[in-house]
Image (cartoon, rainbow, N blue to C red; front, side, top):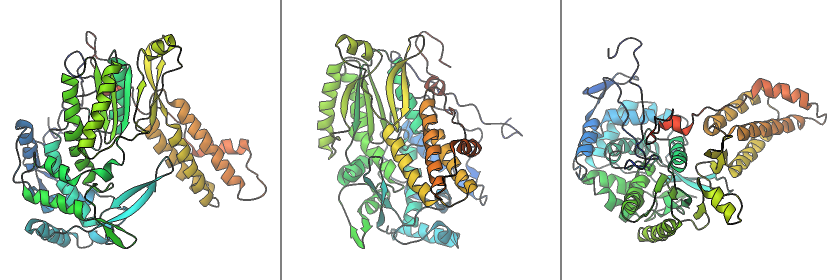
Length: 498
C-alpha cells in the first residue's frame, strides 16, 4: 500500500555487470528503484510551507533519456519561484558571505518578496551576478587552495540552474564518473575502484593521474561549445557566461579571466563534469572499445583519474594520447601527481621474479590503496588513511587545542568527540582499523599535552588521561561495508557477492 502507515520506500539494490559480460564491474550501475508515489505525480508538497513544487523537471529528464541528441531550447521557465525557494533552503545557513556581505539569515527576512524580485530579474534578463570573493583554505601539502565565494543570490540562481541541467546531464554522464553527482559519493568511487582491481582479472598496471589546476584552467570557449551540444536555450547559456565573466574580488580589485570555473561556486562542479565528460570520458570510453588490447577499467572523481590496464603497452599508449588530448583543450596533467605503476593481482609475483620490492602504492580520495592478501592467500586491495592527510589533520588539531587550552575538559571533549566521529565516518572502511586507532592515540596524546600546558604542574598523568579519553573519545569502528557488499557485484558463473 503506497503512502501507508509505517510503509517504507522500495529497497535499493544496485547490481553491476561483469567485465566479460560486456560492461565493467566497477562501472555502469543499474538504475535504482524510485521512490513510491511521488515521481508520477504532478506535484509534491514541501515541508517548509506546503507550496506545491512542479514535477516538470522529471519530464525534462525523461526527454533527455529518450532522445540522446536532443537540444533543449526552453529551459529557463523551469526556474520558478518555488525552485528558487528550494535552492535557498538547501544552502548552508552559516556559509561565508560573498562580496555583498549578505548572509542566509539576512536574506530570509522578507524572503518571498526578494525571491519574487530575483525571479523577475532572471526572466527579463536584468539579473547580473556579482564578483566572487576570493578566499584561501589550506591544502594537505601545505599550499593554499583558492576558492570563489559567490554572493547569496548568485548561489540561489546557480543551484536552481544546476537542478535543471542535472536532469539532462545525469542521463549523459558515464558510469565511471563519480565526482559531485547526485547520489554518488567518494566511497562509491572508492568501492568501484577496489572491486574493479580485485575482481577484474588481469589488471596489473595503474595510471594515477591528476589534472594540474583544473578548475583554474578550464577554457570558457570550449565549455560553452560543449554545453551547446545539449542546451539550446540561449538564456541559460547567457546566465552561465555571466557567471564565468563575473570575476573574482581580491584586495579590493576585480580580476576577470577567460579560463576557470571559480572553484567553490555552486555551479562549478556541474560545469567541470560537463567539460571532462566531453574531453575525457567519451574519448576514454571510445579508446577502450577500439584501441585497448586487454582489460581496462576507469574511475574518475572530478579531476582525479585512476585507470587500470592489463598490458603495460596499453597503459603507455593511453598515457601519451591522454596528454595530447588534454593539451588540445587547454589542460595539463600534473607532472608530479601523474604516474604509471605496477599494481594488481599479479604485481607482487611479477616484481619478485624481477628482483624488485613490493608493488608501489597510490593515493585516491584520502586513501592509499595497496596490494595485500587474506590469511588464506587470496588477493585483496587494502586501504589505509593517507599519511600526509593524517599528519595535516593532526597538525591543525594541535593548533586548535592550543587555542582551546583553557576551556573545560567537557567542552573540549565534546568538540574532539565530533572531530573523531567525523574522521571515523569517512575513514572507517574495512581493514583500516589500525589507522583509525592510530589517529585516536595521536589525538589523545595531543590533548594530554594541551592539558598539561595549562600550568607548570603537569598534573595529567597517562592514567588520568586514559580515563578522560575513555569518557570523551569514542572507540573507532568500521562503519562502511565491504565494497562487494555495497555494490552487490555479480561475478560471472557465481552468485552475487554479499
